[in-house]
Image 1 (cartoon, rainbow, N blue to C red):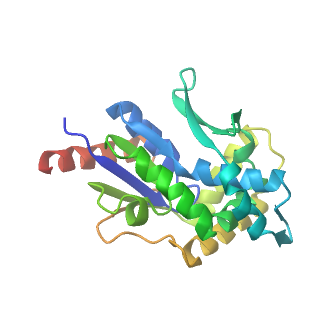
Image 2 (image 1 turned 180 degrees about the vertical axis):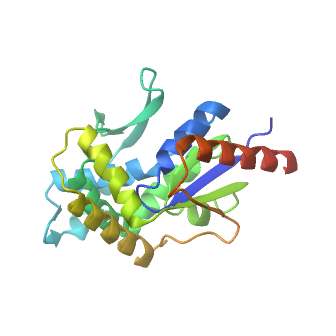
Length: 230
């Protein structure tokens, strides 16, 4: 089977990473969670007190970018690669609601996006890759053979995220999660550098009422159709 590049974009908590992991495992492709990369930078900014509820020292973060080393390391027990920041496994702390509240603001910084996009494009040089994020089909891989754009109502996504955080033992309210989802949507779609938009040639999937199995089957069929034409 010919190898292609699969770009998955969409709003937060639409299950992009879940779908991408499923596809990568099925196709034996490399999976890259770009959201984890931006979360790791946001976590770094929090650790160094560059960002907080009422402040953001962008200049300090930009100056520190050369000190940020990001790496994905495959975990055979989990079946996917985990995010490492300067040699430390940060897969768990970057998934908290606190990091979620800052990640879109950090992702707005052009210097951050430039650094990470360069790394992401290098990862996809040999195709056979599934990458999810906000600007994969529009900026990172504008020539990807298959582009998926995932969406769902804010309420549906907030409920999914709330349940996920509860399962992890996080003490959060549904109202706070919904507020975070709405705020992230606004920032992601209104930032000047690489805003979240659907690529002209992307296939939009509203998974508000789709099960993971139904969604996976539908996208796998799309992939098979694309592979026949390349």
